[in-house]
Image (cartoon, rainbow, N blue to C red):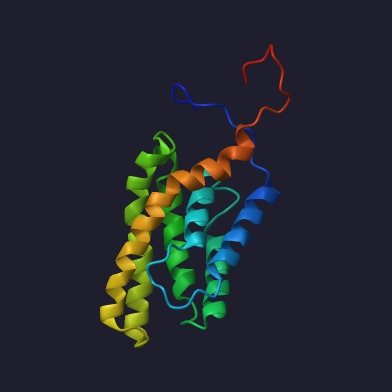
Length: 174
């Protein structure tokens, strides 16, 4: 693949860093902050990031397992987050080649519908199961917007270990 002009050649991603960031995002999602539906889903952002940048390492099965863990932790309808995260990861993998050609702030605009669809799936499943008040569901509109706004920050933080030079030297520009 030809690199877009001006982009730095990245080092390979460390699998321990990938799975460590996913587990950290899972723990951040599990923080006991109460019922605040407008908060961003840290795990969803991290899953999309790694399924866009490393689709062979983080896929739909990982998203499904993490979704089940979130469902068990929240004592929610078993499978609602698993279904939403699996759909999110599938569509992120589908657009990953096209998405990598854009800058992170342009990527955020393209990923916003994925985040919105994920929250829509969760709200619809809760509503069908009779768990959620439809009036409270409107506050979940802000979560995808926050997740899209956080996308450039996540891109900078999670790509930072890959941007460093393997052996810094004054004679090598890479």
